[in-house]
Structures are given as structure tokens and as C-alpha cells.
Length: 161
Image 1 (cartoon, rainbow, N blue to C red):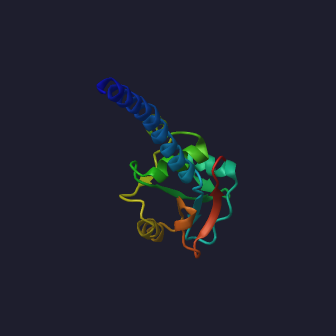
Image 2: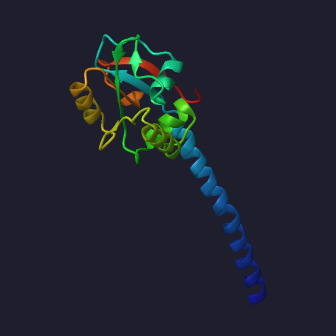
């Protein structure tokens, strides 16, 4: 009787050790797939700012440009380094991670060619809008579903761009 019971227990253990990792992997893939549907908006409260091309948006967030339409100097704001939205945004717009962008900005700052965007304390849309109120030529980004209708959306950044 114990021989049969031992075989059954071993079989159950093997099944659990095989099925559990597969289940966990499929759950994490599902969570990533759900997050992958996030689309971002780059926006401002200044209705005089023109629409951005994807190339211009990339230049702004790489520090290669600080002006729109030739003479209009803009200011960027960034979400906190710990924000999952910041990581997703940089991956989607520039194909870079937050740590890669931190290194990039550190190099620009060290060489005197630029400084990183001001970092907010939270990714709450109210704090973003307050910052934009204080910075008339400010540009921010956020998941499009959290962006109010009355803002000037300069460009959207869909998944895979």
C-alpha cells in the first residue's frame, strides 16, 4: 500500500513542479500584455504649442532640442524614477530603459550640453497639471486615459512606436 502511495505522491510533486512555473510564467505574460496596451500623450496646457512629429518628440526627450518652432523654448517634466509609466514611456518613445536614460542625461549634464527634465514627486495627473500651470511652456507626458480633455495633446505615443 505504501509503495502505491509513494508513487502517487511523487507523481503529484512532479506535476506541481512542472505546472507551477508554467502557470506563473503565463500569469506574468498576461500582466505584461495588459500593460502593453498603454498609450501615452505628450501634452501641454499652452494651446499655442504646435503638434510634434515623432522625430521632434524624440529630440526633445533626448535633450537634442529645447525649442519648438525655432524660437519657443520649452521645459520638460519627468515622472518619478520609480514610476512604471516612466519606464514604459521611455521604452516606447526612445527604446531605452530609465537607467539608460539616466546615464545618457548624466553624460549630457557632465559635458554641459544639457540637463535632465525636472522630476516630479509622483505620477499623479493633478501634480502634473499643477507643474504645467506653473510652467507655461512646459511639456509633460502621461498615460492617455489619465489626460484631461482640455489639454493640448502634442502627440500620442502608441505601443510599439
